[in-house]
Image (tube, rainbow, N blue to C red; front, side, top):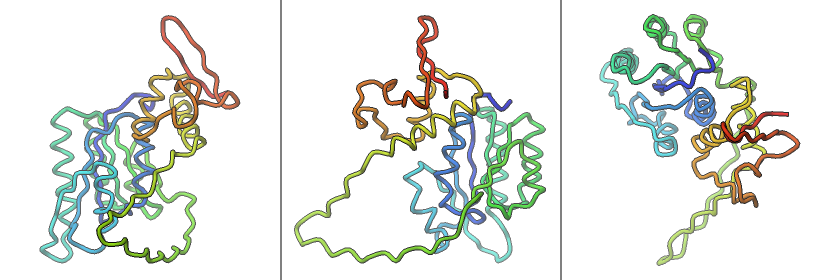
Length: 243
């Protein structure tokens, strides 16, 4: 089932995983298919939830607010499980990603697999083995990560009154990063891919991508001849493979 183009529901337990891994996980999921649900669960009134609040719009996440009325009761888990079962019975997805480092979702993962749902887990190294093994595939989000001290932010001078603060000009994503992502798409498929399918996933991962920003007039000319091989067929169109 690994090469199937899944329709995925992403449910995030924000109390047991860091927001800094969202960008990495999004790209991993795009390789597997299309993410149709993006829901994050937690008490977003807490200071500890600031990281998740900050990226809501960046990743088009839908926050599901759960107030912690009673100490020691994890209402987030309960709501996630209820929503997972509602989505299951809707019949709109064939895969579900549970982003959490909590073993409490082991039972849910097993139940989803019984209903022929492809279960993807995503958590930090601390995730208990019971949850990892209950999933069809598990992404370790902090694999190979080294703790580095965060530099102190420099205080920016206030903008003169009457003038709008200028937004910094956005630079194109490095060409090498896009090519590395394309390489992962092809390797995941295990065979040459239609160029149009690869471009579709690139646009999902990098919505502002435009090949013209890299000095080429066609998407096919963006890819380095040293890394990729492009072939054209009158019936199937252009395909791309890693050399």
